[in-house]
Length: 189
Image 1 (cartoon, rainbow, N blue to C red):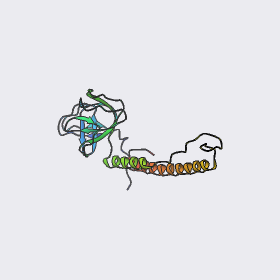
Image 2: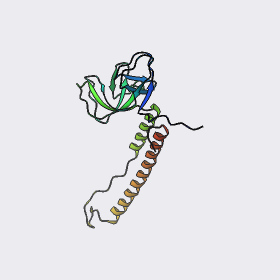
Image 3: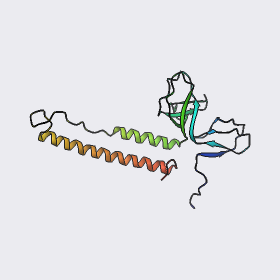
Image 4: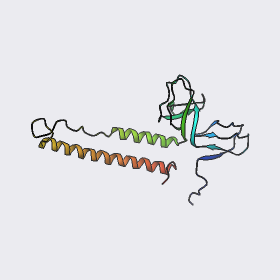
């Protein structure tokens, strides 16, 4: 039997064992959500898994750059850029830089799968390892040291071919990453 569609996944049902206040960050295993409304003990409510939220952050933490991957430290009740060996759970990316003394950071919530996050990091590391050969230097014309010589043309052709191979390898890695995100349900077809 196949899967049955239930909802968009922007939020999930949640029945707390203790009262939850709007804005509380709730961690269930590797799943992190934010309560948009108060939820009473034993009552069915919902946790947001998507959206933009201002999360608390520690003052004096060195700041968080826009676009930085952020993690929730449940023990300290703050967002950080350090996963601390998996103790902190991924919550999304900062969409606005927060300075060292700021106590809030604006994050686009994207509660993700830890395996997917690891796969993404691996794919990025692999992509970073792909490098192209540097293009030769020189001017124009056929004189020594100029660009328009047979040797430089051959070197340019070799460089272009190396770049084509690098782009092909990168495309393969990006397609594999996209397939992983689709399999994990984090990216629509």
